[in-house]
Length: 195
Image (cartoon, rainbow, N blue to C red; front, side):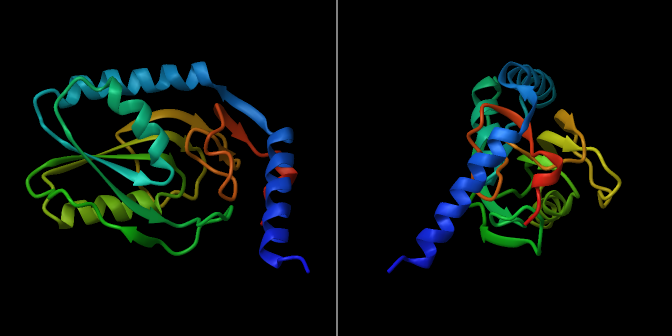
């Protein structure tokens, strides 16, 4: 007898392989690295001597945080939180808080690091939560900003790259839980991004 979970997992891994095979590379790893270098330069200028708390928004923010932190030349403390709207799907739902950070944000400058600014729900919730905890200032850095008119009015102070209104993955962004490790930023073929 076949386990239904293993059958569904096999179908999903096959789907993820097909998605990658048909995906368009929007930015090669060298272009992403150059964007991260630029972000680091801007942050090194802005935050030198400030002693901020850097907060990674898991899971998507893991790669940009891991790439960006070694490029930062100022003193900081690091923590993470886990807030998600996607949960391995291709469309966002209600925001779910899975883990809160542990470092106090009171009277601190907070640098929130995330993979993508799409509609802005997650980034707004994290920003507001940091201010509610007494943060002096909250700065947002995202690897990618998606260009469309569905954003709820949230912006990021530091943006690495802009992408068209397509489903993208790689460098921390995923397709149904897969391809966060893709060495570039890819767009799903237009006819392949459904649930």
